Amino acid sequence: MKTLGEIIEAAKSGERPEYDDLRLAVCAMDALMTFDRQAIWKLAEGEQQGKKQILIWSSLWQREEQFQRVKRAMAATPKVWLGPDNDPDSADVQERRRVSIAIMGGVARQAREKSP
Image (cartoon, rainbow, N blue to C red; front, top):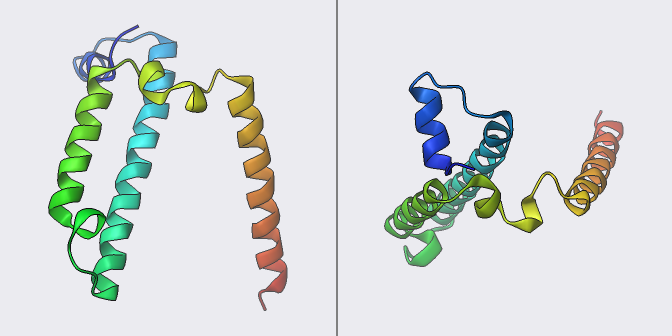
């Protein structure tokens, strides 16, 4: 299996990476986007609340964390980087997703029923 960086470069170069490589690369990129979103929200929260700019509240710290996270992800295969707790081929992961989706669907339904 290719590293995430190799898969992305191959796709950008007009190659056609294997289906499983692409599928796992999409999962890895989704996880990276989630980390980035959390970091941006944390910075915005810190700014709104006037938090001292240290560690997670610091844009410099977040920039370095993001750089290192992407560097590690690009150097690993998506399956290895995702790890067993996020492997979409795992029955346990799929069960956890099914339960989470059902819970969120119930929460959304309740919110819709309560809104005017």
